[in-house]
Length: 232
Image (cartoon, rainbow, N blue to C red; front, side, top):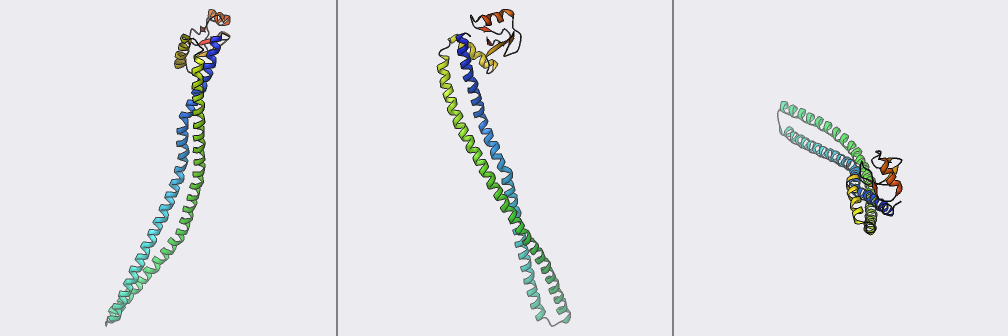
């Protein structure tokens, strides 16, 4: 193999690793976002459970106010009943007292049902909070791992970039310029193997003279279809 091509293959190896690291670093913020999205459903469950418990508490307090209001009304009715001297009025007030008492019984039944429901809602809320805490631990660890991966990848990338600077200095300027143009236009394999009579990059058949040129290893040969630098 031509020394120049061998040098380019080493540069290409580093460039492929550099590209992979850059892709990984670009992917890490998206991975963090996906990790944090795991919390959204648990957070919503906590919010929904808390809201349901609060609404139930408000309903209980409203019933307590309604019961207190009706008891106050009963008290007033009894005072009126005590003060009246008319039998029909006394009877009517007594019926009102009974009616308000029945209303209180009904409201107290509703209150008991809501209080029983409150216990269930509190348990549900506690369960969702616990689930969120567990998910938070997992997400925190995932993010910590991603941060560590980012640090290590960036460190390795810096090392490879510095190494590449040293490697390209060993290659002819015109050849590295050709390589860089191919790297930009063809992707991460500007130097490709010749496989039989086919370019290992574009997989197109090359001419017989190109095959001979590559095999002779007298000068740098390129695929006439894609321009990649070829080697055996």
